[in-house]
Length: 270
Image (cartoon, rainbow, N blue to C red; front, side, top):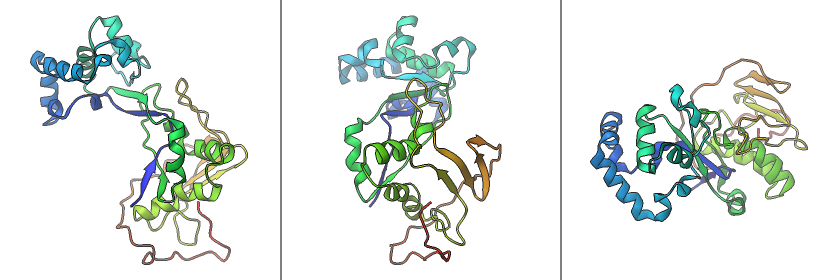
């Protein structure tokens, strides 16, 4: 058994996650019909009210930042909270969400609070834990985890907080997930493995992504090689796009995993 954690206090996904399963059942077309149905909205309103008083007032939705608007009339809401939309439109949370989702063809994104940093430490220190993140590259203000997850671990959790050693942190980002997903030709520096490499300076690497300014590239990562092709050279993207979707293999017990052919020098985790 393994698990992964992402190292930011801000989560991000589609606004649809706020809606219960019954209203989304059957796919986009039935969902849109229910979003426009007053009876469905009333049912949803009743369910939200039973969660607590916070869901009935704009203050309860000040944590939900919206993004990825396409219609010109809605682009003023980019990076604003649902509470702001509710106040300026003079509607409650249900009508605000349903109207925006219908107007934007269900594509609205949200950023909300996630884990509290002091609670992250035991997860990153656990030997079965790995570092992971999904990246939502849409909207003007995505979660800062999109640009900062791995450099934050290296710069803050390793160098500044000393939660774990550098080698162990790199293992949790590279060989451990590659083994878990059955990607037998990736995750290590060894002869015959795919050349997916990140060259960073342990003394300067750090994340610059914040909640207010999430689209900030990190410091201390000057070179990135994907499948043998340089994609970041001297801190600048080269325009190369050699990445591709990978098919996973079946994970094997450690004793049965085929050992990669090694270079004459000792192999290091990527």
